[in-house]
Structures are given as structure tokens and as C-alpha cells.
Amino acid sequence: MFYTIKETRDALKSGKTTSVQLVKEASETFEKDKSAAIPLNAFIEIYDDILAKAEAADKEIEESRKNGSVDALFEQKPLLGIPYALKDNISSKGHKLTCASKILEGYVAPYNATVVNRLEKAGAIPLGRCNQDEFAMGSSTEYSCYGPTRNPINREYVSGGSSGGSTAAVAANQALFGLGTETGGSVRLPASYCGIYGLKPTYGVLSRWGVVAYGSSLDQVGILGHSPADIAEPLSLMCGVDMYDDTSADLPEVEKIKNLTALSADELKKLKVAIPKQFLKTEGADPDVVACFENTRKWLEEKGASIEVVDIPVLDASIASYYVIALSEAASNLSRFDGIRYGRRVDNGKGYDELYVETRSEGFGPEVKRRIVIGNYVLSEQFSGDTYKKGMTVRARIQKEVAAVFEKFDIILCPTCPTAAFKLGSKVDDPLEMYLSDLYTTFVNLARIPSINIPAGKTQKDGMPIGMQFAGKMFNESLILRLAQNWEEDHKGCGIPVKA
Image (cartoon, rainbow, N blue to C red; front, top):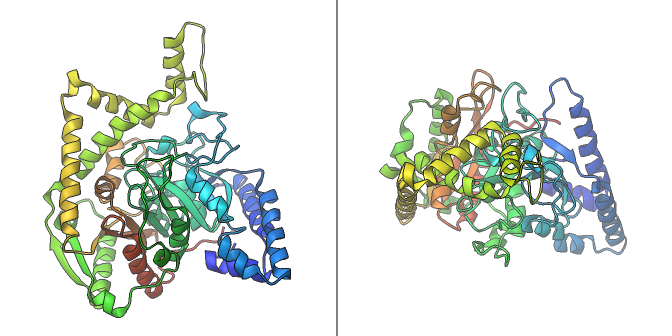
């Protein structure tokens, strides 16, 4: 597998490789990994139609090469024959879709998600569905009915979550890029743990049609790649208004994103960077993370950017507000999984109420049950009063105050996570500790702004990756991707590529 989309496209154009070779290599790696002593478990399954799609792509490329129109073909279909990884909560027509949950056992997607349709139009091939925390609820990809996904850097550690499967597949070079989803950090956090780039776009930039909902006002498809360019190109092809999603929106400067270039020296000198005072607290933060943060800050200063610490007191309430809102919406969204309409059914003949209770009791895992119970409690007026309304009030303040920061500044800089990846099993029975993994990420989702994880270093003791994030104002993906490109050009190899 080649390392970047551009390298792969050039090899396909010249005939140095074929799409069939690429998908066969991925399939062979998957089969080999299944029988490994410690499997990575990034992919749940490889789709059975990838070879036919790859053969069709190779036929198109060969015919265009013969008549001298191969460049024109790839202009029309820039990802032709290129395989990618797909999270198990994004619909791919005719393929299983389970959200890593027993309750959707046997369910087959009847249509493509909009993001899959748009990548298909560009010629890309979905390799298969990737592991995740059940219904995207988790920070480690340990809450999956298929077992945990491991970190490709060191398989004793978690890959992060909930998009740990897609992230591990990219980090291990099993796929060129991957699609995950984010509700509170589920793309950026595993990207940080696995040492690759991960983008959470502005809410609405990528359609949610065909994506199984967790928290509808927060959910967003995200992209994982080895470089900013490998994120920018798929973003430019998938973004934009979708008639099936009323919350979707167009993205400005799409051409600039597609043809990504680093910021010029003059642009860097004009850059104004804010560091939230609330994220300078070091209690609970790994010293290696603090050191990487200081190195990133120093790099920006050396580039000529002006940096200022800003006070955003409401950020202290972001993780509490996030969980109140997300769990309330999750309880509502997951009520549809009842054993009657689709998926698993446990029917003992005692009536619909028993069917409903037993199906959900057997079908959902412990973390999903925990979140449904908390969400329903929060929404229950007689028990919790107006907790949900208070959560929404805090969210509105976060949006307002973060927007005010961007009236003066271009970028917000902060760590992606307080720690590097932790060992499997070390936090799975401590939900509060697991929830605190999202300490630096949830404000982005609440404010609906874009943010990208950059691989910023590694821990001294065990060499596990550490990530930082550049957050920008709404619809300013262009700026954070271009700044990430500056970082990539100065720090190639800062991520830790692993041979699958």
C-alpha cells in the first residue's frame, strides 16, 4: 500500500500498480491479521465486491492510458481505484451495518450514505466496515461486540474511539484514508492516539444522511489520513448541501482545499493564535503532552505567529454540557431499536412490551445501556428538572464566546487529549475516567467549529503518539488544513507510520 493518495494515484496512472493489487493487498492483510496472536481488529469485514470494483477501475484506467486521456480521467474521478476505510455506522448499500452492536445483527444497509455516494462518484472503493465503540459511544473502541481494536504502534494499547477501527486501519497502512464520525472527539482522539491526522469539520459541511445517529445536534462525519492533503481532497469531494440533510451546508474555498498548499511566510506572520487559559491547567495531563504542547507553541512563535492566552470561563463546563446533551439525544435516537422494525429480535411470545425490553436488554452493551439510562433520567422532568435546558444554555454560551474569540484570533491551539493512549482494560470499568478523555475536544463539537489533530510527538517512556489540535472558526477548514500542511512539511515522520 502506498503512503499517500497522490503517490497511489501517480502509481495507478503510470501502471506501477493497479487497483486490484491494492484491494488484494488489503484483503490479504485482513485475513492475516485475523489469525494473528494479537489481532489489530481494525476491519470487521472486507466487502465481497471490492475486487469487481477494482477490476472495473483498472479497465477504465487502462483504456484511458491507451488513448492518452488518463489525466483527464483522473481529473473527472480523482480517487479512481483508491481504497478507503469506512466506520461501521456509515451506510454502504448492500453491506452489513451494525454499529458494532448485537442489536443490529444481520442488518443490511438499503442505500449509501451521501458521503459514500460522493466518494463513489469520485471512483473511490470502500474496502469494508471498521470496528468502533458500540453506537459510537466510547473513547477507546473497547465497547464493541466484535472485541477491541488495538493500537498499531503497540497492540497492548487502545486505538482510541469511537472511530478506532478506521483510525487504526489508516495508521497501519491498511487503507489510504478513512471515514469516522465525531460527536465529542471520536475522530481527533483516536488520530492523536495512533499518530495520524484527523479532521472534525464544521457541523453540516458533510451530510449526515445514511449515518446512524448518536447525538444529532453534534454528530459529524470526519476524515483520517497520513497527511493534511489526504484529508483535504476527500473533504472537497464530499462536502456541500445535501437535499436529504436539512442541516447540511456548503463549504467555501473548496478549490483551495482540494489543491492544498501551506500558508506563506507572510500569512504565518499575520496569524493570531489563542490559547484558552482553561486548557493550561496541568492537573491530570501527562507531562509529555504538556511538553509537546510547548513545542507546538514554540513552533508557531518561530513562524512569526502572535500568541495570546485568552480566558473563556465557560469552557470549564463544556464536558458536563456535552454529556447532558449527547446522552439525552442518544436516549431519544436509540429508542427506534426495538426488535420490531429491524435488527435483532428476542421474542418469547409474551407481548410487545416484553419483546421490546428483552431485545434491548440483550442487544445493547453495558456502556450504551448506561448512556440511555442517564439520558432518559436527564430528560425526565419529574426527576431532573430542567437539566437538559441548562445544558443547552451552556452550549449557547460556548458558541457565543468561542465565536467572540474568532473575531480577534484565527486559530485556537490546545492538546487533543490529556494523555497518550492507555493500556487496554485500564479504564473500561471507570466510565468517569474514560469520559475525561474528551476534556479538550467537546468544546469544538458544542461550538460547531472545525478542528484537526496533528501528530505532534510521542511519549518518552513507551513511544506512543501525542496529538495537538488547530481549531478554526466555522467554515474555515481551509485555514486549519493549510496550517497543518505547514506542520507536515516541517515535521514529516512526527507521526509513526506502521507497516501493516
